[in-house]
Length: 305
Ligand SMILES: *Cc1c(COP(=O)(O)O)cnc(C)c1O
Image 1 (tube, protein in one colour):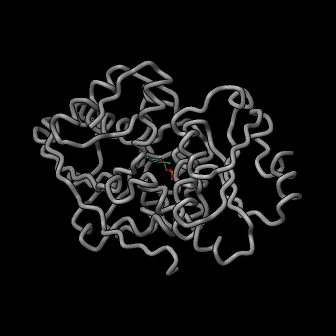
Image 2: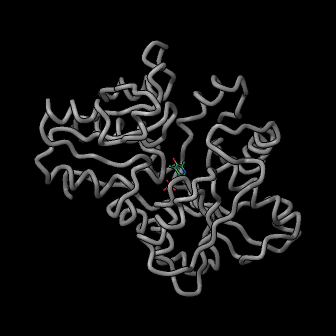
């Protein structure tokens, strides 16, 4: 593991003083994972750490993975590939993207040396069995393949390192949920008196089973917001909310994960439907690399620092 040369400190827990929390007598802290690993979007570094080590121990010639056009996962794999001198290949959903200029996420991936292949949605669904991946395997020999979103057992192991011994004081741990890997790591590593609440950003029905594969106890709950469903969902109130939070707390949220999580938490507290604990730790999983692409795509002005 020495090659990773991890001189990162642990993330700080920042108290979030928003008016609805005070009136409901709920204490909320935000774990600033976004600040510790700016290169690789908070939880993506956690998810890649042991996979990168496994790659180094394997005889694979490159690390191949999958993602959408604005994927934080692709961005993280490319950035860490550049830093640790690992050849990376990205299979990107959307054959039509091959003929467009690269969006900020993909342009950075390419600058970081990631080889990009754009495939149809149909081929993308075939994942490792798709003809592009099969062709690459023939050409390059062994490839280390990571699933979309990077969730596997080693990724979950990395996410068990998010919580520290000091975090036992919290009764509830909250995170945003894409594939569920981060939540699984939190659920597997938290204490018996703690409960994990995951704010789901997609309708993906496979998430609970995936979490159960990696987390031994039913100490977690998923909640879904009626408005913020799907990676590409936009709402003006969400943008206004993110601006308010930035002004009041100095925290830059990302539009896909951390902002919808906090927005929904505030909603639930205001509506009196929050039935979990009163001493909360929210994980800021990063994702701010996606802001430039989000603004371009939606013609919006997400607040920036
Ligand atoms: C990928 C990602 C998530 C979701 O993580 P999963 O382990 O896939 O559930 C949350 N927040 C950010 C910023 C991400 O990039």
